[in-house]
Length: 205
Ligand SMILES: N[C@@H]1O[C@H](COP(=O)(O)O)[C@@H](O)[C@H]1O
Image (tube, rainbow, N blue to C red):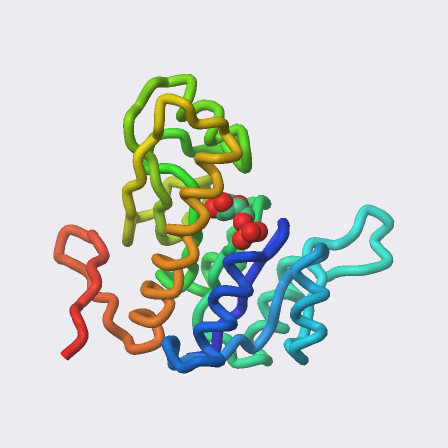
C-alpha cells in the first residue's frame, strides 16, 4: 500500500512508522509527507517527497485542497495517516479517500476530543478531570475533529503525581506502538467493517 502521512508537529509518529517500514514490520511505502514543519527535514533526509499543505498565508507556497487531492492521486496514494496533524481535513479530500483516512488522538475518545483539545491541553484536561486512565485512540476521519469511527485504543494509567508532560510522554510511547500495529494491519488489508459500521482488525492468519 502507498501511504501519505500528514504532520504538523515534531513528527515522532511519522518517524516511528517510517522506521517500521524500513525494518519490515509494515509492508507498505510512504509515498509522500504532507507538512510544513519539522517533520519535513527528516523526510527530505530520507528521500521522501514533501508536499506543503495548506497554502502558506502569503499564498506563495502550498497547495489548495483540490490540487492536493490530485497530487495524492498522482502519487497513487491508497491511504492517508494523520500523525499529529492539527488542521481539519477538507471535505474534498474525505470524499476522494472514503474510509481511507486515519488519525491518532492522545486521549480515550470520545473523551477530551474536539477542536479545543490538542497537544498538552489534552493531558492537562485529563489530569484535571481526575480520570485514572488515558491513552491513544486511532479513528477514521470525517468532516469533524476527532468524531470518526474508532478503530483502536490503548490504555495507560494516569498517576496521582503526573505532570501533563509526563502523561504525554507515556501516551506518546503507546502511540508509536499502536500506530505501527494499525498501519501494518491496514497494509495487510486486515481492517474489516461490522454490519453496524464499526471497524475491526482481523487477526493475522
Ligand atoms: N495529535 C497528537 O499530536 C502529538 C504529536 O506527536 P508527533 O507525532 O508530532 O511527535 C501526538 O500526541 C498526537 O497524538
